[in-house]
Image 1 (cartoon, rainbow, N blue to C red):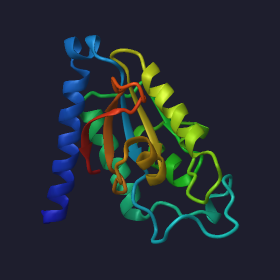
Image 2: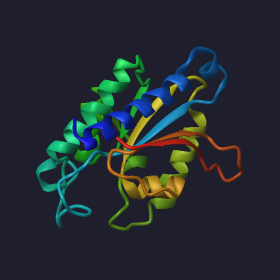
Image 3: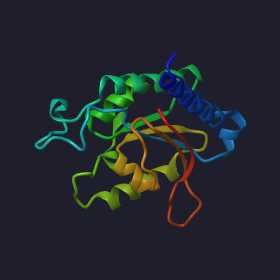
Length: 187
């Protein structure tokens, strides 16, 4: 097995271990809900989307590469193998995020707060506030997955994630509502 494959398997096992601990009966029952904040899997080369892209038309967007599709499937398979099924999977409306969610978890619901604000606009503050509010409301013992973009994750956590990277989050204790990042796992 190549070194790269071993590293991927190790990362996936690390995520599964973190989630197993998170979801274990007595621990999960007393802790706030957990969000697995995931950057979409690897895409075709590029930054942002082509000029004139349309959200409802995947052919106009930058989409998952073959490696990205395999990456999403690996993450989902490992979580399933560990007996972990998120109670809710939310995604940006961009095809690369929805495809990541569907390949990994077989379900997703679009959520505007996870949509990219890469190309400007004044929605960053409102979207980040909505994510913080939703994180604080995840029920005790529940695990949700949110699939989104680098800019959204960086705005919420201050972390610049790799494609397919998962941040295990809980609501923070601070007044500012900033989340606690429990673990970072590369997909």
